[in-house]
Structures are given as C-alpha cells and as structure tokens.
Length: 222
Image (cartoon, rainbow, N blue to C red; front, side, top):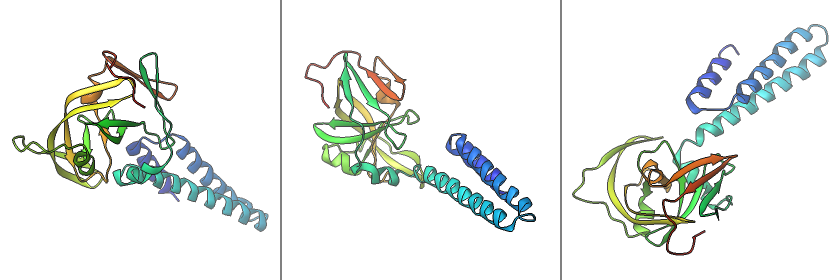
C-alpha cells in the first residue's frame, strides 16, 4: 500500500491527469487504514470498510489505466465510429466542442476526401495515416528525407508529403507540409503547422474556436 501513492503521483505527472485521481487514491487508502483500526472493535464494520477501500482503489487504477491507454493512437482509432460533437460555423469562425475522450476532433476534406483529424497543439507538423494519404491521392515526396517521429510504440520513420488542400467549416489551408506514417493506427493529426496558418485560435469554455485569415470562397463545410 505504501507504494500506491508514489505510483499514482508519477502517473499523474507523466500523463497530465487531474487531481481527483490522487484524491480518490487517498480516500481509498484512508478507508483501508480506518478499517484496520475499527476491525479490532467491530470485525464486521472493519471488513465492510476494507472492502469499500479496496473497491475504490481498484476504480482509481482502472481510471488511470484508461488515461494511459488513450496515449496510444490505436485507442483513438477505435473511437472513430463513436458519435462526436459536431463542429459548427458561427460569425465566420469554426467552433469545435470538446469530445468525451478529451480531444478536439474535426471532420475535414483532404484533397476532396473526407477524413477525421485530432487537433494536437503538441504536434509540430500535421500527420496523415497511410490510409488517409492513399484516399486523398497523396504520395510521399521521394526527394525529401524521411523524419523520425516518436509514438506510443517508440521512434519510427515517416515520409514527408504535401497536402494540396484541407477544408472544413470556414477554414481552408492549401499547399501544406505533412508526414505520412503507418504507425498511428489510422489516426490523423492536425498540428501546429496548420494552426499557425489561422488568424487565431482559442479555447472558450471547452470549445475550440478557429478563426481563418480570410473567408473561404465556397460555402462553409461541416
């Protein structure tokens, strides 16, 4: 039991988890310790408290494990068929609600092909899965050197490519660098090289607001 709290604290620091996990772990261990003391006076009450503490601790570990699994792109690909909040256009801005999995998801057209992207401000460059690149007719540039990217499964090489157009809502981005890799489990990511092309972006009460530099010539998409 003495090793539980340091483990959770390390997990919180590495995964950016919210404090309630530590609070839950502390409460569970407090129940277990209380059960040990009351067990001498009332074995039945002590046993009930010990069971409650163990169940609470198990729940904390399960939540921590779910957060860890979410770091693996393969998990995100499993959510591709789940219903996600729809992006909307208001006042020329595209608004993307936060999904239940804690990510911002965008339905976009890449060279005319419909694709789903996760917005990742920690990613330097936009990434396409091999499947998405093939559907959009995008081929790696043989004249450009591959780059090394780090995923949940370790370091791997990815090929540089060029996207003719990404379009969604009120946003249009053209002639944009991207990497093509088969190591993301089908996940596509919009990185900072896309966000830097916008007039601005911000988060308001859990909603990602994207402002284009200029309004698209065509009607908003999505």
